Length: 77
Length: 252
Image (tube, rainbow over all chains, first blue to last red; front, side, top):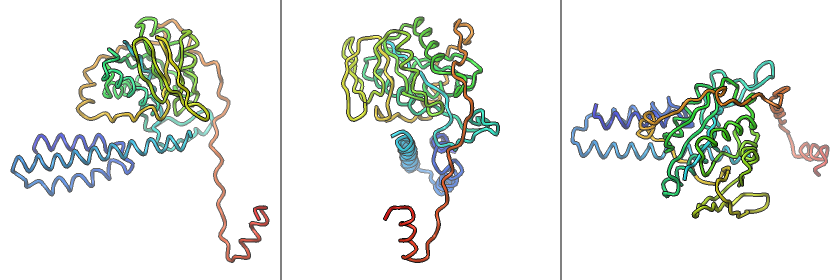
């Protein structure tokens, strides 16, 4: 496995633990997506896909943040 | 400037809370734990002060069982420089009470002499909202509770507080205690590279007994109850029935 892809998968797992739909759901989406692109060999293509993956990691982080903020606002204000 | 951040390990905000069968406390076995959200906000504010080059060092402090070290690591991953862990076996939602924590923070503060203490306004398990206030009382220091904006200018701290029906702006001298409200900032997410870096940061472990303080609880919990369950509604067949039901309850 490409080291960047392994790093990306680890990032997905760390953020997936807190994702509202759970780690299993994140895995079930991330794994097929990675396997789909397993045939890529060109370094530039791989980097592009990894960048896309990192974008999704950031998106998931903001979903978690939003959920946390909303729950707390509902509970205390 | 040195900044102290107090963090607490609590039940995760998303977990459904169960009460123990004997109603003595909330069941903590096999439940996900994480950092108290308000402490996260406090930690983020301290890290931002560091990034603005106002604060030189950010020290994260926690009081709690061995496992609370994880929480401290999260704070370090967010950007705190080092951690102090005061180890005690007391249950952190009932037995370990605000006055005890405030005393511990005061004792540590006397050793490290920080210029600012940033705390979360309350924890989501005990919901006491007292620690910051008690700490300020013990130290005879100025306090700004429920801060929604903090800026430091020389040896003055300008804080905007959220109070009932508006905002209050106050200036504090140092050392000061600030407790974070929900809208102070958006805490950052600890990314994997930062989590790895945090593993190398130093955590000083101190036993609670070594501080020479009595941490006994002063408040006794008599019983912990679930909130009342919502009653199920009924389905009505016709418009007439709706009207008669509404008349029964006195709405119409």
